Length: 413
Image (cartoon, rainbow, N blue to C red; front, side):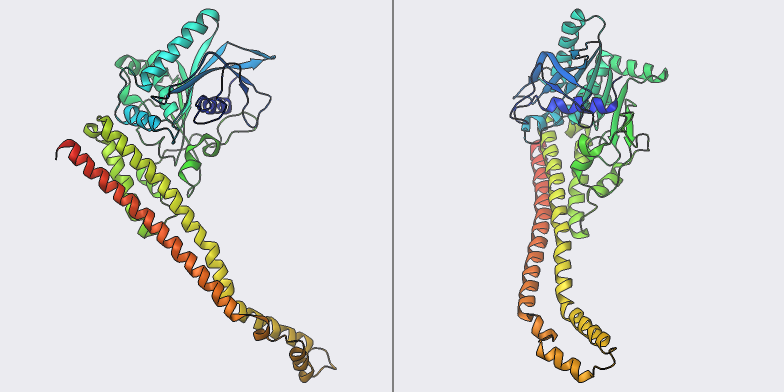
């Protein structure tokens, strides 16, 4: 039986069909295992993995390895998500998830065509085979979309819901399965993930997974950090909680930032999501791409600004220690004197003479100029971090303003 942990490993494997992702792209015959379960093995089988440099589409077909041989009784069609370094993938996010463009030449049609090719080729050679789609992020969207259109089961992770873009027959099939209590679509969504929660749960596939507040965007979105699996069952730990609304999620994205940074970044995020949810704007590929890029850059900037804020804490600790150094040494010397004074045959003058002889006075053991120099350098670093963080907030605000201006020019108003 294939577990959610197995599906996660298969979903991640699809990324490795992309030469931009790895120096040695996965090819037919490649075997791999879930990180924590080396005894469970899967093999990439024909048709060969696909990686389209124009659209950014990647997919591969995988089967379990049983007794050393590929077992075709269960075939998994795995779709890759967004490679942030691949602008074609960003365009696909805009075309599919936002604009709902599923015409010829898009990743949606490529995903359908690939699944049909897999079923035709392997179904004929292995009539016992059943087929399931898997994927993560954009790949999750594609997997859910294909499964609904071709009436397959699907297991995905942090995939945007494709309901609004399904055909009438696909919607009717999903609704029928839900009415029967047998929804074949499972989409595990980290409760704080921006991407998986960005679109309403139209297919009813969402299974929200408990997480903790205050982490970075990749920590929630990536499979390896956004999900944990039970060591015995291989199922997702924390699955089944209530979902979060986008206001809560946006606030959590900005959780680590001070108010002066949080405000412009929150405006940029809210404005972008508002634009992308507008059917008129979302239906225009150019505007959608611009909006997605602003959102991606905003999230990246937020993560970077958070790192700058976190870096201030240890610097402030150094300064606090330096400022209290002389006082702490005075306390230590006084306590030493008090302890020695308990010896009956010692006089106070003996103690003071010892302190003087061995230069134990605080002023003889602390270089105040060096401390002041160190504190000044700490202050300089803190100022630089403040400037960098403020600059990031300003840059994002300006990027959003330029994007909005471009949109007005594009639409002629």
